[in-house]
Image (cartoon, rainbow, N blue to C red; front, top):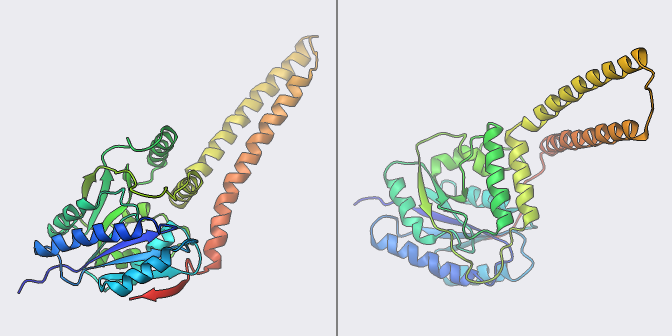
Amino acid sequence: MKNYPKVALIVPCYNEEEVLTRTMEKLTIVLNSLIDSHKISLDSYIVFIDDGSKDKTWQVIDRLSEKYEHIKGLKLAKNSGHQNALLAGMEFVVDKCDCLISLDADLQQDENSIGKFIDKYLGNNEIVLGIRNDREADGLFKKITALGFYKFMNIAGVDIIKNHADYRLLSNRVNKELLNFKEVNLFLRGLVTLVGFKTDYVYFNVKDRFAGESKYTSLKMLGLALDGITSFSVAPLRLITFFGFIVFIFSIIMSGYIFGVVIFTDQVAPGWASTVLPVYFIGGVQILSIGIVGEYIGKIYKEVKKRPRYLIEEIKD
């Protein structure tokens, strides 16, 4: 008898009580279809991770896990962030499945593409990355900032796939390798490209949420982008060095000019602009530079402390 792969769907949740039941129903339909098609094992399952929600998300997960055998749940003790919630799910399913697929609870990442992920996996790919076809569903601000982020990351020398979020398939072997990365400042989109292994892609269209509002605010997106940039690139630090060199050269030129005016002319007419503006300019550059350096030092501080990235309050297995 042929052994079909056992699949775990990992779904981080934060204040998603409005969508969870419907999400479970849709994902269950997909799993049953793949089981009936003899592509995945009968004991494949779904894991919902409650990232310290303030609504009734955990109560919904608890109820679903009691009613359905293929539904499992993790409750984090407090809100630890999307990346840490996803990591908690990855650690929970390690060696309990042949491959995992992570996706968002709102199912804007088309769940009907899961079959394509499985086909790629059955074709001996150990990493399958979901890539959105376009950003038409995004607002103008989100679209511009997202594309700018990917552009900057590529300029900074970071190997990151454009328009790939956290919709991906990982084999159990790749999952175990990823869990060897113990850094506190997680940016899984960047780490996935570091481990190697045979990789393929699935392209999908983003859908509108069928209920509720997105919990991924602009501030959270900015924080994720900052983590990605500072976790994988020292380009901002090198930019400070380069800019400091330019300012130094400019200062030498201006000093020579002023020295020439004083020695060879009688047109010395001191003004407030020539004094105040350079002070403001250099002061602004210094404060910005200290802020960038401080961001890296803060990350070093967090890594040295080695505090747990998340704490699990309850498990429904």
